[in-house]
Length: 371
View 1: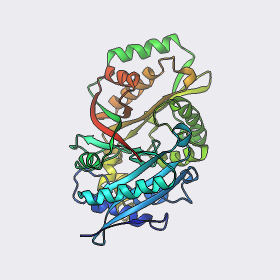
View 2 (view 1 turned 90 degrees about the horizontal axis):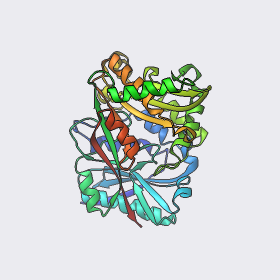
View 3 (view 1 turned 180 degrees about the vertical axis):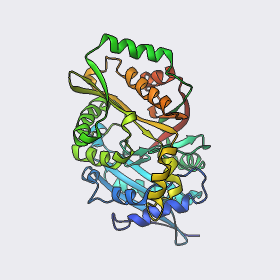
């Protein structure tokens, strides 16, 4: 049995890179195939502005000539300001074969060393603004939209490869048990009574570019001190926003304003993975039909992000945003919602979620190693 690791060129080899994932996850009951056209676009340096801020190399593993794994190695230029000489790896997918996984990781780490890096973390596809983390438990349900999924053997393989835990990312689940918990409802109502200058409104999709600019201003302020944060350029943020525009449901996305200034936002997505899974990564020939006819069947949500501008984080703006989302979910009879991901040491956010009755139900992990 021979293992060969080949570097590839993007975008020329992007389709071959993506195709490997169908081999790795063949027969997996919980894998949700990505939309191929979206991944091809994302991995095209001419179309994705993120490539202006990263040096990256992707690899495919072959076993006896058959593609059986992938990995990327990347130097995020923005993150070098945060932590110099830290390289990332990502898109780390492999069949249950240590020789394959080790060969891929060795190739990625060798490339990072050649770029002058002294440590690595991952998986990031490509950084914390994108999908990231290894699911370490449990493995009994499908991932929600824009969350990672991997085979149950991945965490043990990471351990065997000598990678160690850096940080856990938590996913919380909230069942729809009726009205918003009284404690949060009272806090939200009392806050709005005391602060009549605060208004909560749905995102205005008709002013999409304007809303994107307002969200970006809050986003970069709210998260700049968080672990792993990589500041996003205007161009990169607009690209990402356009990619998720079709998932935005104004019933679940809100902006908080004070005197006409946007100071906080929350974005919750219907879990379109419930629709995407049977599409098997393809829009044609029947994907669009399935999407349009099954869209109303989506019955769970993912609370994607809630951000408060640093200048206003002393205010309890989270409470009215949570309550508005909760009330709308109840009205639309969703079965529940996932809030993800939350840093394990973000006690403030974890406390707020637990007051809502949320519980940790999935754990994802970032691993690292010295080079």
